[in-house]
Amino acid sequence: MTYLILILAFLSTLTFAQDAQPSVTPPKKAIIGFQKGQLYLSASTGLLTASGSLIDTDRSYNDTLSTQSQLGLIENKTQPFVTPFKYKPSGSNSGSLEYSLTDNIGVGVSMLQFSVHGNGQSRYQNYSNTGASGNSSYVRTKDQTLYSVPGSYLMYSGTNMMLSGSYHFISKSILDPYIHLKAGGGTFLSSSHRNLYDDDKYFLKTGDFSGLSKIVGIGAGVNFFILEEMGIKFELEHYRQYLSCTNFSSKTLDTTHVQIGLVFNLTTLQSGVTKVQK
Image (cartoon, one colour):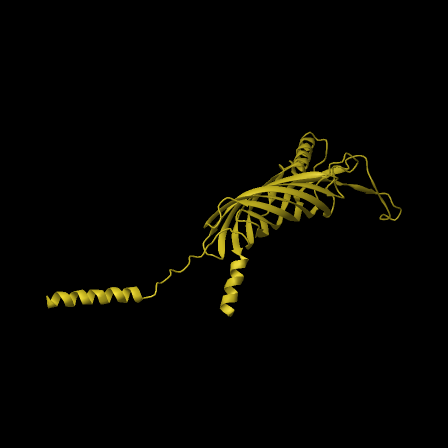
């Protein structure tokens, strides 16, 4: 009986000791992903394809030139055949700054930069000297005044700044799928053939002409947050630009971009720096 009383007393002591211990609250799990009141910075790079009247005009021009060369309508002093037209875009680079108004809606600004080069032929003017001293003046001759020359030239190189609005389907999650709309404008350089039917319509001008562009775009992507402060971005975008410069009045350029990059939560990064400083 004595042993039973001692055992019961010992168990009672253990129970009281457990009750007396303060409860331990588990650490709060950090919320990552897209959420209200955060500022995000992203940068991406990738590949693109291009179309539109800017490219169609030069392709049509080169096809016509090839036909005329084969029929002997123009003199080709550099090679027996005109090479097919090709265009080669550079990689596209973009960056954006986005603020989350709600857990699903964001607004911001973004930048897009890329270039496109053409490879084909252009007619160049052949001049006949009529000056008394042999170099005082030049006039265009009427016979065999044109010949084709192969080469690479700049069709487009520009930078656009845009306002953006986005919708994020899943908030406070590692996976952050979204869609967005963008609109804005920018500047560009181009030496593409112009589309006016005047005396110089077939000549590729020397040097690059500067112009202005208007741009609208739509895109979709997903951010994969590997840390609370940083994630990997995958994005697919399509843009249409309306171009105008001193060499041509109006052309379009359509581009589709596939990009990969990084996204940073600047609000979380700033909070982390503040904690470390304290």
